[in-house]
Image (cartoon, rainbow, N blue to C red; front, side):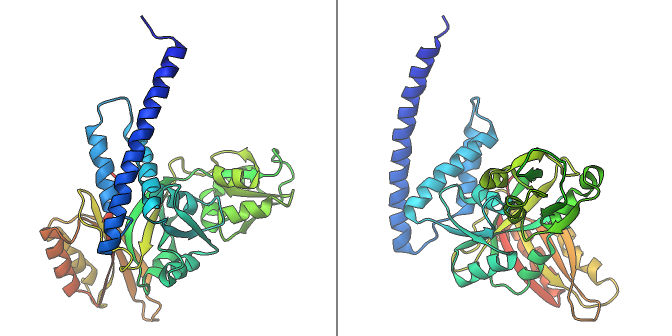
Length: 360
């Protein structure tokens, strides 16, 4: 005989009570771990350990819960427990409501301490100076390619990458009224304007496209001007009390942006190997025929897969370039170590930006 709604609710209440008791038990264990970490001087945030915890639970799961649901739930559980040890100060491109803020929450959970910054440069500066323990910056978009400023700042920074996340970016047209009529200016970050250019040409051909330091900043400015609209996230719309005039106006349906977490090596050393890691490099080679071809040969010979290859001008006036390379694997693995050692011997400039776990 099927249970009634009141009976089911009573059962759910009982399960919730058990969950709460277990969560408090887990929090007590995490608190004890925090005490030991303070004695040892070890890091509170461990992206490699957290990735392994979530992967293990997803493998053990045999019920109705979906893998992504398990990941979100345990991220927040670990975030709340981590906050008992020490809240993590995280810098990102602000103000509140940006995709960078959303990416930071994806990595650290809602219990992090927010440090919104006015520019990507300031995110780097705040993290180097210690105003924030970690920074979250965008590095590439599936529609518009690399975020040039982030790549350029990596060249001379002491920060390294310790984690990454990828967001499905859905741009909303936001305004303080619900009509498309009378829009004279559309504000957004230049990347967002580029990602929505076809929609804007079709629906707002006469509106000025004006760059803002972030999409959320565009939303903040549009809040006080009835002739302005902004391209930003639902989060920004809720933050500034704006109407969604048109949803999902990005030109590519599966528009994604990749973000990385950066910090000083003394804040968190290179994470330990997991089953799925990425190593990011910046290199340059002498300007001679075949140099780039030779650069890639060690990866092929040692069976290391390259997942990204970007070039940026070295600004030396000599038509020289830096190459940004991502490879699968961790230097603790013998074949990766051998490939990188050989690759380094071919380079005029070589810098490891970081080795970190990636999401499956």
